Length: 190
Ligand code: 5GP
Image (cartoon, rainbow, N blue to C red):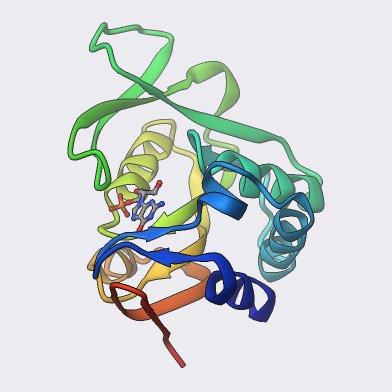
Protein backbone atom coordinates (compact mmCIF):
# COMPACT_ATOMS: atom_id res chain seq x y z
CA UNK A 1 0.00 0.00 0.00
CA UNK A 2 1.75 3.12 -1.28
CA UNK A 3 0.21 5.43 1.35
CA UNK A 4 1.72 3.40 4.19
CA UNK A 5 5.08 3.01 2.47
CA UNK A 6 5.28 6.78 1.97
CA UNK A 7 4.49 7.38 5.64
CA UNK A 8 7.19 4.88 6.66
CA UNK A 9 9.70 6.64 4.38
CA UNK A 10 8.83 9.99 5.97
CA UNK A 11 8.40 9.07 9.64
CA UNK A 12 9.60 5.50 10.24
CA UNK A 13 12.83 5.16 12.19
CA UNK A 14 15.03 2.14 11.64
CA UNK A 15 16.63 1.83 15.06
CA UNK A 16 18.90 -0.97 13.89
CA UNK A 17 18.67 -3.90 11.43
CA UNK A 18 15.76 -5.46 13.39
CA UNK A 19 13.53 -2.77 14.94
CA UNK A 20 11.44 -0.20 13.10
CA UNK A 21 9.83 2.56 15.16
CA UNK A 22 6.50 3.85 13.88
CA UNK A 23 5.49 5.64 17.07
CA UNK A 24 4.35 8.85 15.35
CA UNK A 25 1.54 7.19 13.33
CA UNK A 26 0.88 3.61 14.54
CA UNK A 27 2.25 2.66 17.97
CA UNK A 28 2.03 5.72 20.22
CA UNK A 29 0.38 8.55 18.30
CA UNK A 30 -2.11 7.19 15.79
CA UNK A 31 -2.92 8.70 12.38
CA UNK A 32 -6.67 7.92 12.24
CA UNK A 33 -7.12 8.70 8.54
CA UNK A 34 -4.24 6.44 7.52
CA UNK A 35 -5.51 3.79 9.95
CA UNK A 36 -8.97 3.93 8.38
CA UNK A 37 -7.52 3.62 4.87
CA UNK A 38 -5.45 0.61 5.97
CA UNK A 39 -8.52 -0.98 7.55
CA UNK A 40 -10.48 -0.51 4.32
CA UNK A 41 -7.63 -1.98 2.28
CA UNK A 42 -7.49 -5.08 4.53
CA UNK A 43 -11.30 -5.43 4.43
CA UNK A 44 -11.30 -5.13 0.66
CA UNK A 45 -8.70 -7.88 0.32
CA UNK A 46 -10.69 -10.31 2.52
CA UNK A 47 -14.24 -9.19 1.63
CA UNK A 48 -15.31 -12.44 -0.08
CA UNK A 49 -13.92 -14.81 2.56
CA UNK A 50 -16.99 -15.07 4.79
CA UNK A 51 -15.31 -13.49 7.81
CA UNK A 52 -17.47 -13.37 10.95
CA UNK A 53 -14.99 -11.74 13.34
CA UNK A 54 -11.74 -9.79 13.31
CA UNK A 55 -9.26 -10.62 16.08
CA UNK A 56 -6.72 -8.06 17.31
CA UNK A 57 -3.62 -8.81 19.30
CA UNK A 58 -3.52 -6.34 22.21
CA UNK A 59 -2.52 -3.57 22.06
CA UNK A 60 -1.02 -2.28 18.80
CA UNK A 61 -3.26 -4.55 16.72
CA UNK A 62 -6.44 -2.95 18.04
CA UNK A 63 -6.50 0.23 15.93
CA UNK A 64 -6.02 -1.45 12.52
CA UNK A 65 -8.26 -4.38 13.50
CA UNK A 66 -11.06 -2.05 14.57
CA UNK A 67 -10.89 -0.22 11.24
CA UNK A 68 -10.91 -3.52 9.32
CA UNK A 69 -13.83 -4.87 11.38
CA UNK A 70 -15.78 -1.66 10.79
CA UNK A 71 -15.22 -1.91 7.04
CA UNK A 72 -16.17 -5.62 7.03
CA UNK A 73 -19.22 -5.00 9.24
CA UNK A 74 -18.29 -7.69 11.80
CA UNK A 75 -17.34 -7.56 15.52
CA UNK A 76 -13.80 -7.07 16.75
CA UNK A 77 -12.48 -9.41 19.44
CA UNK A 78 -9.36 -8.48 21.41
CA UNK A 79 -6.88 -11.18 22.30
CA UNK A 80 -5.80 -9.83 25.65
CA UNK A 81 -2.32 -9.86 27.13
CA UNK A 82 -2.25 -10.87 30.78
CA UNK A 83 0.79 -11.27 32.97
CA UNK A 84 -0.70 -13.83 35.37
CA UNK A 85 -0.73 -17.57 34.92
CA UNK A 86 -3.96 -18.06 36.86
CA UNK A 87 -6.02 -20.71 35.11
CA UNK A 88 -9.55 -19.67 34.33
CA UNK A 89 -12.00 -22.12 32.80
CA UNK A 90 -13.97 -19.33 31.10
CA UNK A 91 -10.94 -18.35 29.03
CA UNK A 92 -8.76 -19.83 26.32
CA UNK A 93 -5.15 -19.09 27.27
CA UNK A 94 -1.74 -19.51 25.65
CA UNK A 95 1.82 -18.28 26.22
CA UNK A 96 3.59 -15.91 23.79
CA UNK A 97 7.26 -14.97 23.52
CA UNK A 98 7.55 -11.22 22.95
CA UNK A 99 10.01 -10.13 20.26
CA UNK A 100 10.41 -6.51 21.35
CA UNK A 101 10.28 -6.99 25.11
CA UNK A 102 12.06 -10.37 25.24
CA UNK A 103 9.58 -11.66 27.82
CA UNK A 104 6.74 -14.16 27.95
CA UNK A 105 3.10 -13.27 28.47
CA UNK A 106 -0.31 -14.93 28.34
CA UNK A 107 -2.73 -14.26 25.51
CA UNK A 108 -6.35 -14.84 26.52
CA UNK A 109 -9.80 -14.86 24.98
CA UNK A 110 -13.14 -15.33 26.69
CA UNK A 111 -15.03 -18.41 25.51
CA UNK A 112 -18.14 -16.17 25.31
CA UNK A 113 -16.91 -14.35 22.21
CA UNK A 114 -15.76 -17.15 19.94
CA UNK A 115 -17.21 -20.42 18.67
CA UNK A 116 -16.67 -23.10 16.04
CA UNK A 117 -19.07 -21.17 13.79
CA UNK A 118 -16.58 -18.31 13.49
CA UNK A 119 -14.27 -17.62 10.55
CA UNK A 120 -11.68 -15.20 11.87
CA UNK A 121 -9.27 -12.68 10.36
CA UNK A 122 -6.30 -11.93 12.65
CA UNK A 123 -4.88 -8.38 12.44
CA UNK A 124 -1.67 -7.06 13.95
CA UNK A 125 0.69 -4.13 13.41
CA UNK A 126 3.90 -6.10 12.69
CA UNK A 127 4.87 -9.58 11.55
CA UNK A 128 8.43 -10.32 12.68
CA UNK A 129 9.23 -13.74 14.13
CA UNK A 130 5.59 -14.78 13.96
CA UNK A 131 5.32 -15.63 17.67
CA UNK A 132 2.35 -13.36 18.37
CA UNK A 133 0.43 -14.53 15.28
CA UNK A 134 1.22 -18.20 15.99
CA UNK A 135 -0.11 -17.77 19.53
CA UNK A 136 -3.24 -16.05 18.19
CA UNK A 137 -3.81 -18.99 15.83
CA UNK A 138 -3.32 -21.46 18.66
CA UNK A 139 -5.79 -19.59 20.84
CA UNK A 140 -8.47 -19.30 18.15
CA UNK A 141 -8.09 -22.95 17.15
CA UNK A 142 -8.81 -23.99 20.76
CA UNK A 143 -12.38 -22.85 20.08
CA UNK A 144 -12.43 -24.74 16.73
CA UNK A 145 -13.02 -21.46 14.91
CA UNK A 146 -11.51 -21.39 11.42
CA UNK A 147 -8.90 -18.88 10.27
CA UNK A 148 -9.48 -16.69 7.20
CA UNK A 149 -5.98 -15.24 7.28
CA UNK A 150 -3.56 -12.86 8.88
CA UNK A 151 -3.35 -9.18 7.93
CA UNK A 152 -0.44 -7.07 9.13
CA UNK A 153 0.44 -3.47 8.45
CA UNK A 154 4.18 -4.12 8.24
CA UNK A 155 5.93 -7.38 7.53
CA UNK A 156 9.66 -7.54 8.11
CA UNK A 157 10.20 -10.11 5.40
CA UNK A 158 13.80 -10.78 6.44
CA UNK A 159 12.55 -12.31 9.70
CA UNK A 160 11.06 -15.83 9.85
CA UNK A 161 7.40 -15.03 10.67
CA UNK A 162 6.09 -15.05 7.10
CA UNK A 163 7.54 -18.48 6.25
CA UNK A 164 6.52 -19.94 9.61
CA UNK A 165 2.87 -18.97 9.10
CA UNK A 166 2.76 -19.77 5.39
CA UNK A 167 4.01 -23.26 6.24
CA UNK A 168 0.89 -23.67 8.38
CA UNK A 169 -1.28 -22.75 5.40
CA UNK A 170 -2.19 -19.28 6.66
CA UNK A 171 -2.87 -16.63 4.04
CA UNK A 172 -0.83 -13.54 4.90
CA UNK A 173 -1.67 -10.07 3.64
CA UNK A 174 0.90 -7.36 4.43
CA UNK A 175 0.36 -3.72 3.49
CA UNK A 176 4.09 -3.03 3.44
CA UNK A 177 6.90 -5.56 3.22
CA UNK A 178 10.39 -4.62 4.30
CA UNK A 179 13.20 -6.58 2.69
CA UNK A 180 16.10 -5.06 4.59
CA UNK A 181 16.85 -2.62 7.37
CA UNK A 182 19.88 -0.98 8.93
CA UNK A 183 20.32 2.18 11.00
CA UNK A 184 18.55 4.87 8.94
CA UNK A 185 17.91 2.50 6.02
CA UNK A 186 14.54 0.97 5.12
CA UNK A 187 14.35 -1.04 1.93
CA UNK A 188 10.94 -2.27 0.74
CA UNK A 189 10.41 -5.59 -1.02
CA UNK A 190 9.46 -5.04 -4.67
P1 5GP B 1 6.50 -11.44 16.28
O1 5GP B 1 5.73 -12.21 17.30
O2 5GP B 1 6.02 -11.59 14.88
O3 5GP B 1 7.98 -11.63 16.43
O4 5GP B 1 6.34 -9.92 16.66
C1 5GP B 1 5.11 -9.35 16.56
C2 5GP B 1 4.89 -8.32 17.63
O5 5GP B 1 6.09 -7.67 18.08
C3 5GP B 1 4.02 -7.26 17.04
O6 5GP B 1 2.77 -7.41 17.63
C4 5GP B 1 4.67 -5.95 17.37
O7 5GP B 1 3.93 -5.33 18.37
C5 5GP B 1 6.05 -6.28 17.87
N1 5GP B 1 7.12 -5.94 16.90
C6 5GP B 1 7.88 -6.80 16.20
N2 5GP B 1 8.79 -6.17 15.47
C7 5GP B 1 8.60 -4.85 15.68
C8 5GP B 1 9.25 -3.66 15.18
O8 5GP B 1 10.21 -3.67 14.38
N3 5GP B 1 8.76 -2.49 15.63
C9 5GP B 1 7.72 -2.40 16.51
N4 5GP B 1 7.31 -1.18 16.85
N5 5GP B 1 7.09 -3.50 17.00
C10 5GP B 1 7.53 -4.71 16.60
